Image 1 (cartoon, rainbow, N blue to C red):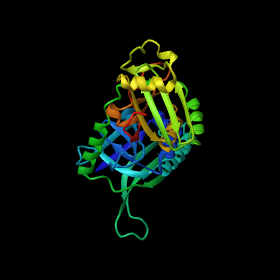
Image 2 (image 1 turned 90 degrees about the vertical axis):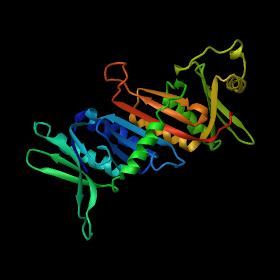
Image 3 (image 1 turned 45 degrees about the vertical axis):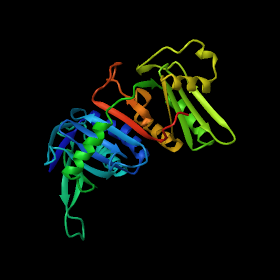
Image 4 (image 1 turned 135 degrees about the vertical axis):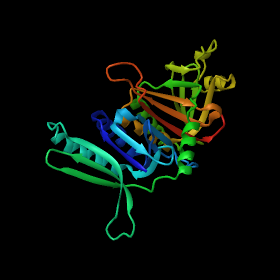
Length: 320
């Protein structure tokens, strides 16, 4: 099992300033999954059966790395767990040293899998090693990682990722994540369970109910990807709750309940500075999906080298 590569400048900046800070907010540990074509950072995906949000950040190999070399008995795929803060600290430190050597054409940051014998240990342990090569010396930082996943576990991990590829039938774009963040901050003082409804008309409804009070908000006429239909006549004259119930009954909306804590956590992904954010409910209300879209810099074209999404488990399959 072997892996080594050099970071690209864009790759270092993306991870250091955007994606690793977001992943740190999701949880202490993540899985790093390396394939011949992609590098992924996964939270809550493996092992299956967790009750928290799943978060997947996938990058095209050439966006993050150059001189990329990987080999393993798991179809040249390698996966392991690591502490996100340690990964971030090592990369940030390496980047700082690298910037001091920017005038040196040979300056580079290499990353590779190694095994080393810890002090007092009887057997070697695996590490992800960051080596910053400067004009006069090389600085090495070793981040401890888990034992890489077995071939069977890698196959299971890939199967979990493949099963999550199906997009919701309707996705609505939330234009202002900061506005949604402030709304969720207010709603979480009311209750722990949030009812989320998404219509094919482009409406997003959020509602918290307790025995004493019901508080909600809605975003209307949002941009829709996927199935989009016009609302029925007289729709605009009805109350928000009546509109939602009508849309669900007509098969033109889905509604699920999710943990307020999970939704608040997923909003921390805004630290990765997406260009667009879409919300959708998976077929049969399986989960609430949040997809973060990135554009090629200087354009409005989707950057297909970056894929970032969260899947929030539902607490109730009913339509609220």
